[in-house]
Image 1 (cartoon, rainbow, N blue to C red):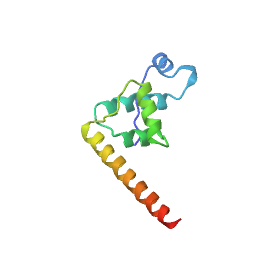
Image 2 (cartoon, rainbow, N blue to C red; image 1 turned 90 degrees about the vertical axis):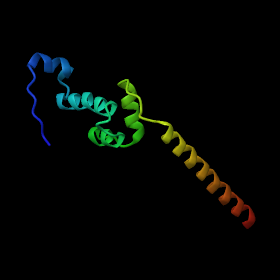
Image 3 (tube, rainbow, N blue to C red; image 1 turned 180 degrees about the horizontal axis):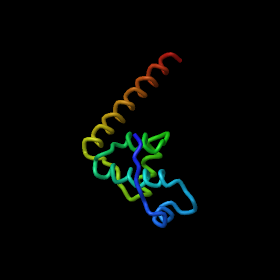
Image 4 (cartoon, rainbow, N blue to C red; image 1 turned 180 degrees about the vertical axis):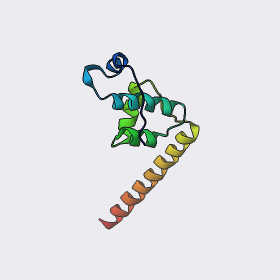
Length: 100
C-alpha cells in the first residue's frame, strides 16, 4: 500500500536531516509505536523494516525505548523448551556413549 502525506519542506528537512530517506524515517517512527501499542507484532515490525532477524528487531526497539512484550506465559514456554532441549541432548549423549 502506498500512503501519501504532505509535510512542509522545513519540517521534512528536520525529520530526515542531510537529505535522508523521509519515507524510511516515517516508517522507523511508526514501527516502535505500533509495537508498543500492540498494533504490530514483533514479526510485523521485522517485515516492515526489512530486518533479517528477531535480534535486529530487539535492538531497534531497545534503541527507541520500547520494551519487548514478554510475559509469564512466554517465560514458562521458554523454560519448557530449554528443559526439552536438555532432555534431547542428554538422550543423544547417552546413546552416543553406548555406541563407543
